[in-house]
Amino acid sequence: MINDWITANPRLSIILLSFLITLVMTLVTKKFTNQKRMKELRERQKEISQKIKDHQKNGETEKIMQLQKEVMEGSMELMKHSFKPLIITFLPLLIFFWWIRGIFAASAIASTWIWWYMGTGIVSSMILRKILNVY
Image (tube, rainbow, N blue to C red):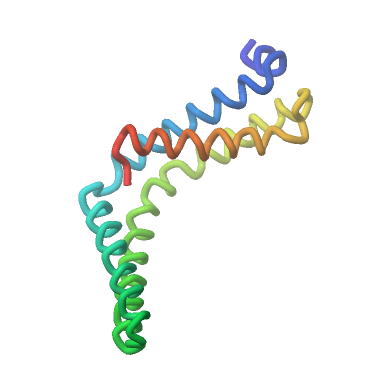
């Protein structure tokens, strides 16, 4: 029944499916990451980036190297925090894509469904992260 509806309305269904998957992934990210720490790290990286720009104007390469090291450490911590939601959602996403690929292979958008999915996912993610305050 759902497969028939998806096949009959391929563009609408891929947009809805992409939005729903993005919503679930955003909620998992919010639940399983330390949002306060993520916000602190991102704000610190913005500060450091500004300091790097200021030091580049003055040609202070040694200070720039120290700041870049600090940026790398912050990036590694951000990545570490991002792995937990990735691990939780990886297998369900593989199963979802295996199922959906089979359905859209026979639809009117067989060659472009992945682009529809990715475009909707990117836009949905930006909107949902802003609305739900996910960092």
